[in-house]
Image 1: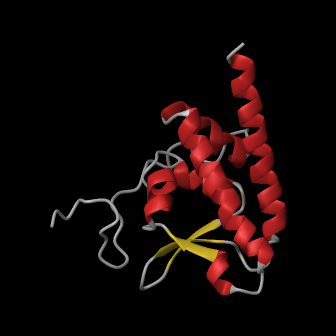
Image 2: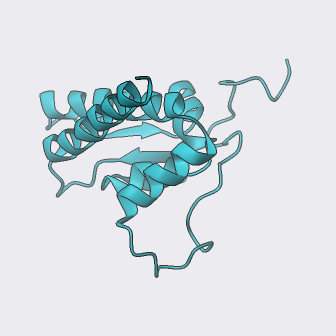
Length: 144
C-alpha cells in the first residue's frame, strides 16, 4: 500500500507535524499562550478546523472526567486518525492543545497528548467548552 495513506502508521511515526510557536516568536508574547495558540490556529487554518479540534478535546476530556482513575482515558496518540486530522498536522494545533494545559509527551513507543496527573480534567474541559462556546457565538454574530 501507499505509505502516505492517512492512518496507516508504523508505530510511533507521525505523518507530519504542523508549525508551532516554539522557537519562532520567543517567549515575550504578551498574550497568554491559550489565546495566542487559538488565534494563530484560526488565522492559519479555519474556524471550522478550530471547532473540530476543540470538540475533540472536549470529548477526550469528558472521558477522563467520567473515569478519572482509568489511565486509558488520560492520553491519546498523536497518530490517532482524528487527533492527526484535527491537531497534529495542523499549524499551531499542538499550541492550542498545550495552551489549555495538556502536555505532549514522547515514549519509546509513540507520541501522546496527555492530561498531566496533577491536573483536573474537568477544569480543562470547562475552559475548552468556554472557548468553543465563544467561537460559536463569534461566528453567529459575523453572519448577521
